[in-house]
Amino acid sequence: GLLPNYDVVTGFGGAAEGDALVLIGETKGSLGASIYLREVLNREDGAPPPVDLKLERKTGDFVRDLIEAGELTVVHDLSDGGLVGAAADIALASDVGMELDAGEAVAHGFYFGEDQARYLVAVPNADEILAKAKAAGLTAAVVGKVGGADFAGKAATGELFRIPVAHVREMHESWMPNWIEG
Image (cartoon, rainbow, N blue to C red; front, top):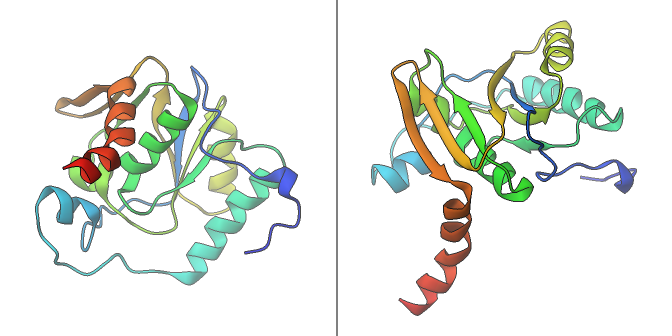
């Protein structure tokens, strides 16, 4: 793609203590052909999530317009690894913890689903983004909050994982040297 103004780009860093994590786009929990199936369950089956090009464009245009208006400074698309992958990238780039909440959703699909046309954003005021997404005919929901020193997730049944961000960083940064040495 072309960037008409490189000064108006956003990245993964910059999430701040107290920010809300808002997921823009609908989660259906598609795990077919996902990293979760391959790496955790050692399976390579299932169809990848369907792609709706009109929805991809609508959601992408919505997020891009918010970036260009200066309303978003922390954005990550959801693709490989789903919500957990995107949130971990933001936590590492921002050097801050996160608490994710699947609520009543099926946790595996919620956390690792690779449904298309989804973005995770960190914002100080979720209400504004939620209202704009609704007005645009898009699904959006608060899925967690930024803060602390741990990367954690829960569901209706309770806490599912809690890992210090320092440990996540250590694992992220050491895998290649360990792979080369071993």
